[in-house]
Length: 487
Length: 96
Image (cartoon, chains in turn brown, cyan):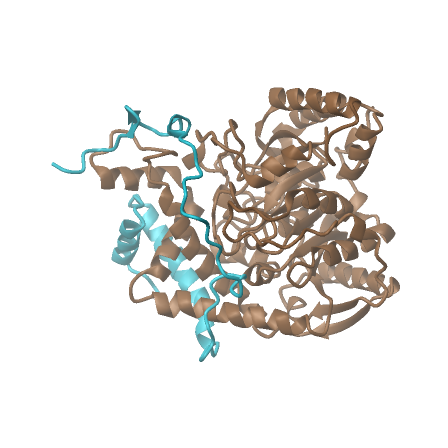
């Protein structure tokens, strides 16, 4: 079988169950593909070949016995931010270069239980702080559509791996757009669930009120399948929500007729590339053709979401990253003079430039005399943004707009000025601040580079959001396009 | 607002980060521009707005019975430690 890689995750799972090929054949073929393209893409930090083949062999035994779960034998990759027992979990940082997790993240354990075969851990911005994968200690991952360009970030390795069809699906996390932005830039589907829907236990923490695990896949149907296996209550995460997980796969086929779509007025701003806007507007006409109605909706406080984020996220990051002290795990400097010297040099050496920038920004906005002016102020504006969303969802079912202002940009183009980089997430951050589910689906090309359409829904409306994305993908083929050299 | 070299050194000390002499002006510039950027929030009227700490603000935090649920896995956890002896984490001398 030479065309494993052009099949979707859903199809592969069905073919394995029908025993059209074995998991060992499938996993071996994709491991060979990963090896062939790793030099060009740098999508992986670790490849777990031997363990993957062992799990594939046991999956084949289960499939032969007619047992197993929804994903038995299906190869996937995990963003290197999810703890994996016995496997290095680096989070893209020198700080954790030697860290071998003693336990599995809940997401990892659930996907394991569903039968998925982990083939490796994907590249990412250091501690998920970045929008281009350029802050990784292991070097940037590259965009399969053009290796001179970024794949987006922070889940850049997962996005590049799925776009190049090295794996049919990968886990990812989204704190300010880190699933949706790389999905848009790589031409794949990316789903960030509602805050609390997927357990954060075993996810290396960045900004705990914003972080949420999700998936990067070729199609919305694949995202529905993977998410269904990952989501649900977990007592080990104090912010996990105890509400039943609907069958996202079963909900895919519902008709869209009557769906009320709100066009996010603030997203069609002067920063939006005109060609990018054109593709998004064409996609909206497709939804009208499917029986949905469009109306413009204004969220007046939404333009403040990036400034809010760059107070709240660094503040939470500075608190979360205080744990890296060179004592219990992680990097320790050589021959420390005293305890303070050990803290300072271990952290100074272990963290990269962007992580230090955010730790210091957070330290400053939380420090005595500045807490009210920056941190509390940002949390108040966050409440106003949240209220804007709640008001909008009283009159529409979902909100739509672009995922990013432009298609993928060149490696190195935005590294000089942090603000320029931060503004890449201008359309994605709002959903994190309000904790809303959102998906990015490919909706066309600008100069041979993919463009994403973003669909945002009310809390816990994953089924509706995926249903809308799936309906779009049934009548379009943007998500099936494979970059040249990877077909 | 522009931060001084001394302020950057002070923030780095609070954050327990060793910065080289070359790094200080870099962060002086970027932190100043970030603070200027987030200064856009000042123009927003937030009188009487309750700060939102996280998206599940309406939900209460769960409590569990105060009983031991974890088994002892010290050796496994200490396998990641830079320096241990006799089950203890070793650090530079703190008390003379």
